[in-house]
Image (cartoon, rainbow, N blue to C red; front, side, top):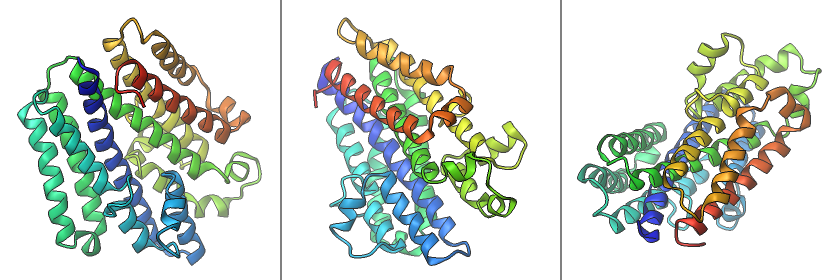
Length: 318
């Protein structure tokens, strides 16, 4: 396969996954903002959301103050924000168009229709009328795109590069979410001093974290207990049976990377396998003892390094 073809397939899937992840984060933050809370708490939520996506500086250059309306506009429909849902869906569609001959008709039509329909929804004021409904629509279209891809594409290199892009982006996003949501509360919740009142108040915080990755019901099924921060971290990092966990994502990356490996990619495969092994044999108590923030920061650096290696070995070099 030509490197530029692999590059378009990789980024097509990655941008679609990024659009879904952004919609998930916005949806949970929007729903949480409707709860009774102080203005400082609401501001902290939207500020943290910009931090997750590394958009704080870009937002500050365009807006004077942080508020729900401007953050959602910036992250959903602003064409000047390269990570907005608008630009992610456009980039996914353009990458798909560039390799139209490699895709099945169903995959192309799903991607193209998603872009066209999203523009119509924005024109009709869907973001202002009901943000939650628009976010659900984006998530549904991403699910549909993945389902159509797996259900109609030949199980060859084309599919493998799409899967690598999807799960590398998912691993990156889950790690960013965990880092921002847990950073600053590690001492409070993983130490010995948190009181019952604090734990009750922050039930909604940890519920929101779980809902942002569709893991609330999964948590209840696995742990059958009150929501505890260390269990949330374990579920979203080390459980191979949790679809959006770090380990599950890296399992998919390694499996698909194995399927396309060549004589130049041995080092990239080794780094991916080692990253997966650290998660597979890791223990949450050991990770928390050494510092969750430090662990996740290192994980994000390694994922970034892995993406660079993939580009060098298979795609158009960055």
